[in-house]
Image 1 (tube, one colour):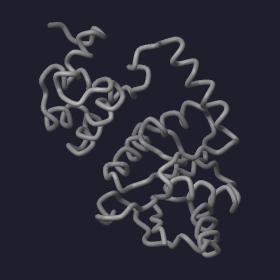
Image 2 (cartoon, one colour):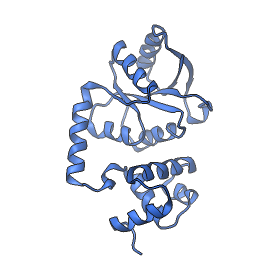
Image 3 (cartoon, rainbow, N blue to C red):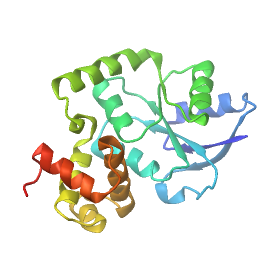
Image 4 (cartoon, rainbow, N blue to C red):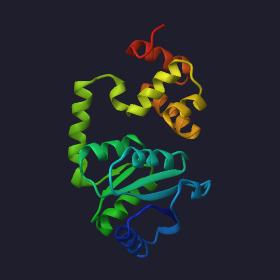
Amino acid sequence: MSKIILFDLSRENKMRVVGILNQLRNYSLFKEVSTTKELPVESEPVTIICGLAKPSTHNFNMIGELNQSPNHRILVISEQDDQSSLWSLLQKGAAGILLAGFSKEELQIALDALAAGQTFISPRVSSGLIKDYLKAVKSCPSLLALMTPEQRETLKLIAEGKTSKQIAEKLHLSPKTADLYRSKIMKIIGVTDITGIVRFALREGLVTA
């Protein structure tokens, strides 16, 4: 049975999620937390269902904090349906997005997708996100277009020789988040070491030799 953790949900969404979970056989409510420090260290994958009431840098960074562990699968229930906010959620590591007012069937499909290691985006917003993605890639074919502003700044600092601790202090992040950004940057640009990052940064003009 897959474990579910609730994080910072509104009262209405919490009641809705709990009510639906009680009807599903393959999922059980494991814990409810209000800070990332309360998250348990799990050896098996868990799905964290969290809420997004208002778009803000703090809230988007919180998604990144929740996504620190490879065993965490993040499903966001958003009160916002603007494409910019939803795109930021995906860039920060959300594996699934539902809009408030979701149905039982929609939540179950989302949970099944995340449990299988897949991504789920509410059909109500997926077409708009795809259009925005294609527009971004077309207008800026560089792989930099696939990175968040924080990831691009992290890339530049890595290429300048900064350590994870120094990057974390400069960008006001935790060292773990800085390391997570480093891993995601490597995945995006297709390299496996710092040398590859430096070469990419030089090619893109982020740093000079």
